[in-house]
Image (tube, rainbow, N blue to C red; front, side, top):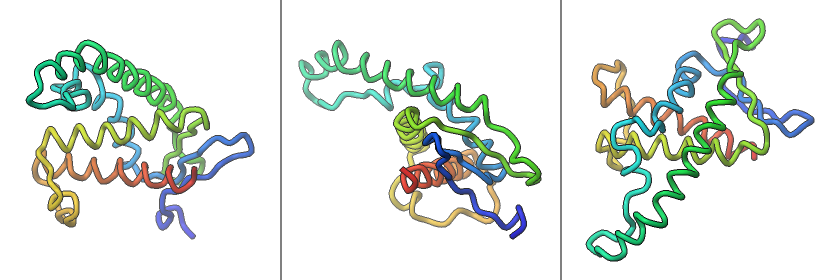
Amino acid sequence: MTAEARLPRVEKDAAGTFVLRDMPPLMAGALRRLPSLLSPAAPGIRDRLTGTPYPGDDDGTRHWERHGAPELAHLFQSAREVVEGDLRGLCAEGKARGRYRVAIPAGHLEAWLSSLSAGRVGLGEEHGFGEVDLESALPDEIRTEKESALLLVHLLGWVQGLLLESA
C-alpha cells in the first residue's frame, strides 16, 4: 500500500506510547492548532468551557465561579500544556512523503482526550454548530470560516476516535 493510500492510525509501542501515524498534512495542521484553540487568549474560551452549570441560579452561579470554574480552567490549561509539549515532537513520517506522526505517552492520553473534546466543544459553541451541522457531509469546497471550523471539528474528532479505539 502506498503512503498516499494509508489512513491515519494509532499504534502502541512496547512502552505503551500511543503513536499517531500516517496523518495527512491537514490533520497534522489541525493538531497544531489545538493549543491555540484552548489558549486563555482565545475569544470566550473560558466561558465556553467553564460556564455555569446553574443557569438562572445566582447563588449557584456565584459558588461555581468562585470554586468550580477556576479549578476546571486550571485542568484545561494543564492538559493544553501537555498536548503542546507532545506536539513539539510532531514530525514527518520517515520516508512517507506528506505524512506525519506524533507520539503520545500513555500518561498523557487523558490530557489529549480532554483537549480534543474541549477544542471541539469550543469550536462548536463559537460557530453555533447544531446537530444538523455535525451530522451533515462536508461541502466539496471549504469557502467560509464556519465551514473551515466544521472541518477542524471533524478532524479533531477523527483523532479523538482513533485514540479512544486504541486505548
